[in-house]
Length: 421
Image (tube, rainbow, N blue to C red; front, side, top):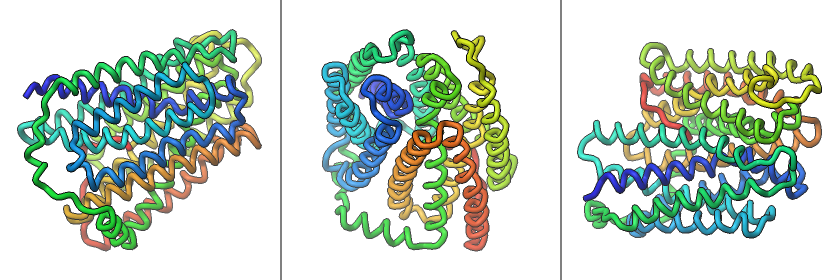
């Protein structure tokens, strides 16, 4: 089996989907500029992405073996290629909604298929873990690259210009290369083809049985609250940079990439620290520092003068400091996921993963929509002060979750190897 071609295709898949999935903040800003869409209306783009991921992931998890991993990935790539090509051909808000719905559906197929395929193309647990970590790091590279790619096509002198839509031709091209590589490579799925997939009803029953456990209920609310916080900030940071800090559009998008870089580095650093200190105390410290950053930086945004910002060199200090919140919120999501999965027997990991996907998607959508409405009604600073509420809730929820986990007698030591949501 030509494993290098499969692996390259998987990396390209993750790269293009990382850019598309995390371009919501950029696109929210641009549809306001180009199509005259209000902030509250633009906020629904997160729902088109996240809800589709949740629904399709749940359904696909049951039937992916019968569909076939390669066939599912080819369909996902084809769907995204068509959606990307449509964006510059039909520049409208409805095509943007369609793009994110296609991206969500495609990523659900890709993620489930890729995670299953890795087991078929690696020879042992070390190789599996190595490629999984490389794959996740490549996803982070995609997130960071996206901001710079989009900003390169934005005309700051003409906010109404649709030249940024040309980016989608590039993304369609990358996806097409990944499709050709995958199409021309054989994947031996015979090891799993004999397994019978469960019905959707059975999967739903398993998830509901787990969801009613008190420990899992607290976890679900905690995961929901975290993703609400993260996506509320991530999706609206480019707009905050542009509308509040008065940065040029292209620079607003570039500097929002600091948040993605902070989250990537924060999760790497947490992987090292969690081998030495309690996950609970690390998260408590991170949340307190996060709240401190919000209280420190947002007042600085009020003192931004009217001088013209031309680049990174004369950007206001708030544009550099606020995205560093990513360093401190980064460990929360993977740490609580590891904690809940380690508290459950292996046979329940699949249904639990389904719950994580569903409620993470709902949290992301809720966070973006709430932040968008507050942004429109009260301004960007008030919208970001709102982040103090989920931070405060997380301090309480994680404390309750930790105590409940100790009572089960299954507290575990969380170590490195955590991925993003």
